[in-house]
Image (cartoon, rainbow, N blue to C red; front, side, top):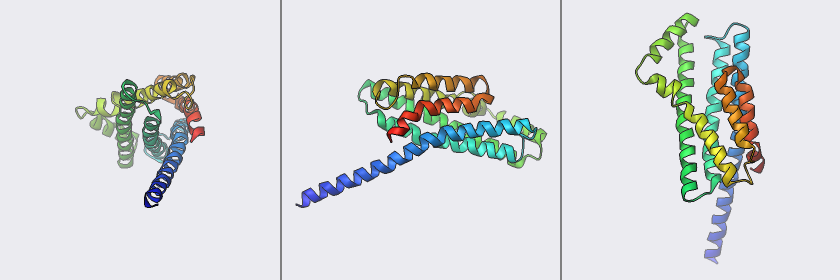
Length: 211
């Protein structure tokens, strides 16, 4: 009797944990792309009104940017968990997920630097000079701005592609194409980030519906 009760309690606890994890992943799958698209939209508006520097537009945009990147952390971890592969497939999923997480960390640091510089700088000229000093520190450019942040996009694209093979019940065959379109659009021109983010959100939509 005691053994049966313990087993039932363990099963209930596990189910509760899975439910919480599902809600968290489902929310993140929506929040990540939406926040990224929001960053792109606010950035466009700020540039259109000629006030995209130290101030409200820059701050709001980069707060959305930071929140969007952080929202993808549970996305990477959740997709990694859902893969459920073993052997070589599992290794590939792990590499893709951790590659994306390393990239996300670099992008988050970039967003924090951008916010800090804008907070301290009095105007666009001062902000530009501060960025020159920060980016002039050896290693900062590749680690925070040019190389490592790309791992975020490569990891996300690789993970979606792998799940399209391993979990066809969750990730549709067209999802890697949509994700690739989102990454390419964003790489071509940051002004296209809202569209790129929506493409990535579309690729992740079937996973969210399953949560």
